[in-house]
Image (cartoon, rainbow, N blue to C red; front, side, top):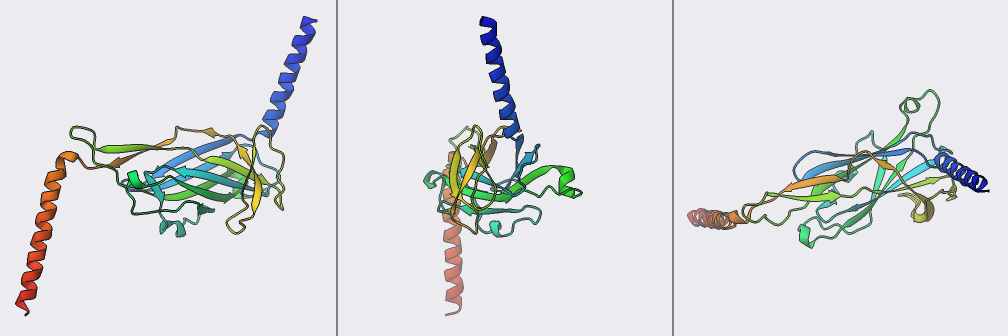
Length: 243
């Protein structure tokens, strides 16, 4: 009897594992930060080892940017041609706000999966999509004397949502929750999306932002005051010469 119970338990675990492996695609997340200083390009690539059926599948990344960064609204309209994604910013963006006064920003990144046609270049490379988001890092408070003059913050990995099918019909999700989100940038109606797990190749990105030092506060204030005063006097002298 004990052997029979053990055999049944192992069989159930095997069936559960087989179903999970069959319905859970092998998805790898790759994140890259390009550039330096206060202007960066965030490139997120998702690689699908197992082709998804039907081919009419869409990818939605829900990003939550911390206080130290915001999407550059001017660069969003100049997306690279090789990246087919659309960015919809849900939060209000204050580009002038200091980090301490800013709020986290939520954005949606829509991307279409390539069609796995036979003989195409995409079929040879495998399924993958890329999302490009231009970021601007905000100014941080100056560092106390003697400390490292860099502020650091972590950009968390995004939430991945998949939608396969037409007319808003979502295929069955296994071990994932169904959530409602806009169908696309052009269609703000709500569709059912499948929250999907993935494997991240590296840890969440860490950004280092150069900051000033509190020990330079008096020097900077003095130089600023002297420069403004000198320019004002020079301007007044030039005006007086023409009176």
